[in-house]
Image 1 (cartoon, chains in turn red, brown):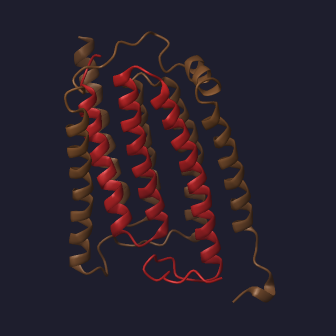
Image 2 (cartoon, one colour):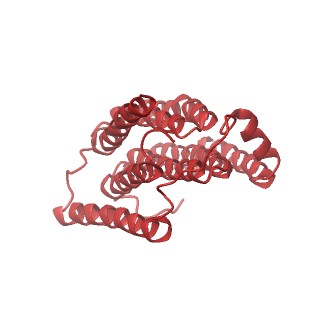
Length: 102
Length: 176
């Protein structure tokens, strides 16, 4: 394949995943935590597609599409939760959301 | 010559991918974070194209930049997009621990992949022209991976039902 090998894509993917994990750990706004989660899922997708290219089989791409669907579903439910929390006039801060009682 | 162009495109896409990823995490305004995520997803789509995954790249732009980020922007606009500085109000020990944890994850993944597959990564399989095309993806989805396709529909249904339930207004007497 022209250009960099699969290992270069994997290194990018690892750095991106670490960035997302750092964002999930450091941020307190649940919205940005969700955005960082999307970054982590995308880093996983990049690794899957790099491996699909390396093995020459399409299964990795199928898996990446499935992950994309799960990420979209997760965004819907996560944003729904955030809107439901803000309706109750609770602070949107993951450090303060320590009880999940209705 | 092709090799050189691919390298240039790869370096540009990788730099923009990593910098926009860091921007998403470090912007204090959630609105800017969501906009940086669009750049992140676009450069990721370029990398997918370089890896011969045309259909996934198109789906990435449509599903993420077209639908998920718009939904994020809608919710941020609805909530007023309060700024939240990434470092404010945190004990510095906690920030340090977060950096260490993220670094540890990165090192673990690199070590595991290098140990298990380090010697196979230098060679990539030869692929034919149709690899990653919609026709090939469709054949795989409705053939070898039919179960994943069907599970996908159930996940989407559950997410739609969950979104409606979470979005329904709370009855007046239960409101606190």
